[in-house]
Image 1: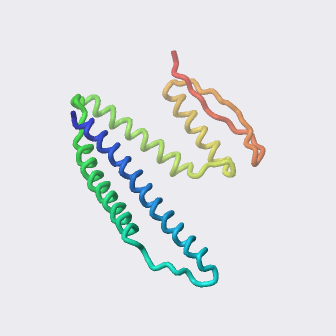
Image 2 (image 1 turned 180 degrees about the vertical axis):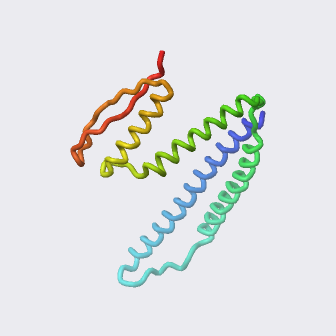
Image 3 (image 1 turned 45 degrees about the vertical axis):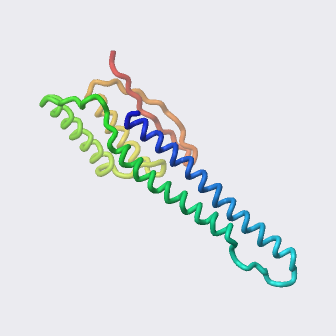
Length: 172
């Protein structure tokens, strides 16, 4: 079995153990609640004559803690195995032109975020001047790249004003 299969098997084992621990704790709590209820029915006027947990209660609690400990250990092992799983194909080596292209893209994205978030700022239905400025900036950017820009108008109900979505299709 390869490392990915081991990781999947560990994940399934963890899920099963978590469910088992949940059922065990649920059973223990409902069992204790039932004992308290029966004790209260036997002596309705007195305080609860419960004398504490029994040996069975202690064994169930220890079993639940044991299952949780096993879940913790399996989680740590699964983490180590999953971190070590690597793709079989090597990553492509980028040449200088591809690196320049990625750097240019990053710089353009930073410029767009700076303009939209910094210069134009907040824009929502209650700040229509920001929406108009952002739409105009996007329209100019797409037009400069040679993309045709179309508008799709819609009405914004809270303030009953018409706005528009900008759409661009790649030129054929």
